[in-house]
Length: 178
Image (cartoon, rainbow, N blue to C red; front, side, top):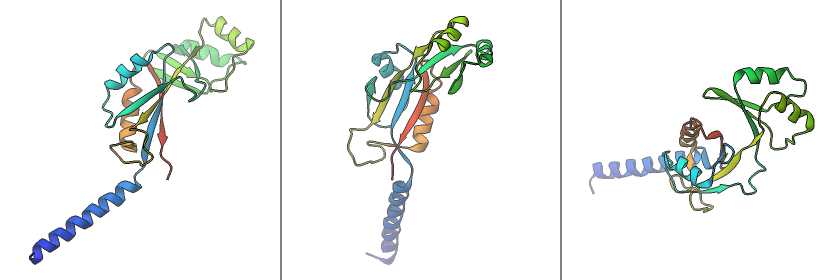
């Protein structure tokens, strides 16, 4: 092997090592938590996810013991403003979605009579989100990008695309520790 070939070989080896080290330090995501509108079925979830470029295989776990789910209310801006005036009103997150707002309530939320009265007075319904956990890969403990996890930048792209879907309320990322 001549001197130039050795230099090229050493360069390729060093470059490969640098890429592997860089990849091992990049933030990885193992799964997505997605909250869908009330009464979204698992086949609908599958159909929605098929429309997005998810670069790894995944499994869907809906309505298991992931969480108790979150309640939400769908209302236009005028109704939201009316609700904010009520002394019994509390909300956790408000999201703008098309022509209406989604008011997310915490998983610990338990509707009481006062709250239900406020909703009834404003002609609104309390709904429960369908919570799904989307596991990337085959469940192997070894986290290899492109096999059973994705880089944070790809997960954020998927999250942003999914949140444009009318049936998707909110998407969370499940980061890999370490």
